[in-house]
Image (cartoon, rainbow over the protein chains, first blue to last red):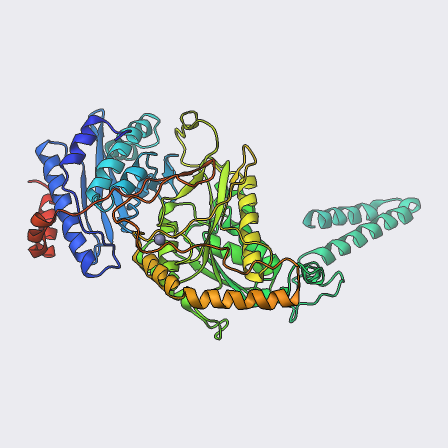
Length: 174
Length: 427
Ligand SMILES: [Zn+2]
């Protein structure tokens, strides 16, 4: 597993793996897959809380479980920066990973595709492909979004592209 | 023209004040101005009207004379057939928009255009879109330009993302719609061109085409903008996009010196134009049945190297629709061979000794079903030099049976509530 730090690697190994290879058009298979997605997300969220490293909220935005929305945040210089988080489950899931979007950061960094989709490292897609269908939403967040926030948020803050919400509030008050 | 008119007014003002001896020459100058202006007015936007039949007559006003010449020269048997064809183009970016323009100028019958994006200034290093179209959806901007170029082409614009469940459904039903040519067999389109820039969308096109048994062509330009490829995919007959991990033409420079720090992708109008040209050339050959249709054609811009190859379908393909199409292809084999033989005989009678036009089987052998189970598909074996897999195959994986039986019993609502509880703000 080239390309990830040891913490990410050890966290990843603790997220339950999924077994059902089914996408949103697969009826009963998808319901089964959704259950596994929930279990992995529950395990991952609980683990983060236990380690005092809680960093996202995500829940299905429709009954079919094909669209997910939530929040993610990153602490830099003791300040918490929070962003909306969203993605669709692609029709070809789990052969292809969900494309994670942070719409508020669209246009603020080069490490993003159109529409606020985060640009993943060259290592993500090969690892996802190799592990189909074992990786799910929780794994995509752990391997894709967490390292992206860790790499990009400090740069965005230090370059002034994003401001802490308290700073924004106080400057608009004055 | 506005500036010219303003100048003309100024000149008229000065004419009033000019001494009588200079009057004549000033009037002559003004006359020239007015003539120039009326010429300008003549050349400004005149929409060409629709043409009912394609004519081979060589006159200035015939937009198809040079294309119909292909028929006179014996390159194409029946060029006019192009008006019967429907081509779907998925992704109206650097490759798709140029491909659409080429097909429009060729007089294709109908184009279906799919994209979810809008035109941006950042697209202006590529061909086709114009700065004044910034902010329009790419599909609408394309329809605007293409209908001006050739009003004979029926244009349909779909602003949607084919990888989402809803977008995919609309995509499928638009491909199935046969109202343009009800007597056509199969789906409502003759060819789908994938001009998207990401793996997810290519997999969605692959899924749709496998389900619809629809022949399609893939195209791609690498993120470093210096290589590309086109590929013909016939469900059941050739490898589908999921049969083997996606291929890329290596740029031939050390990957480690190519670190894309700080950017997602580069793009060049040249590479995209070359790939669009290769794609539409292959499309015309396929639709109008001339020359040899390439199965895979790569392009390495740094070395001007064009690898070609053919890929058989993978009997263990992870795409269920692909495996179904492969089975149908094997069942239809005797009939197909008999038909091919009959055609060979007929053609041999027609042109004894002359070259046959390549509407045949390309002597592809069908892989039998008896391959050992659970083996990875041979990875880089048999690939031409400089072509490599972009992604690995999925590891062989058999789900552990015992603990999962418990899972099945779990209730989805329960699990949802559990996650919601974890998501709730802590008091
Ligand atoms: Zn396949």
